[in-house]
Amino acid sequence: MMSCRQLKAPTARMLLQQMKQDWLLQRDHRMFGGFSMGGVTTWYQFCSSLKYVRYFYPASGSLYWGPDSQGKDTTFGGRFALNALTSQGYTKMTSTCT
Image (tube, rainbow, N blue to C red; front, side):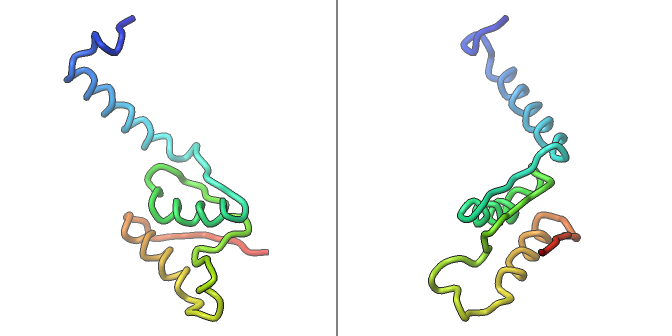
């Protein structure tokens, strides 16, 4: 087995490129979720990581969070998520509410 020091630069680059391809190919086997502030983090990951993760579960957390969110534009979160979705090349989002 080769050590990291024995790897030549082109080999290391090829290895990293293969790892990135494998990471993208395995998107269907990943879920990101969180509760409360973890739910807020989940929304922001949804807005930036769709090519890496397929399923998101933001439990009890809002995309538009903070003391200034009360009474403000209630469509902001939906528009923000839709813009993030389309900017990453996707066209559909399914959600459920209880």
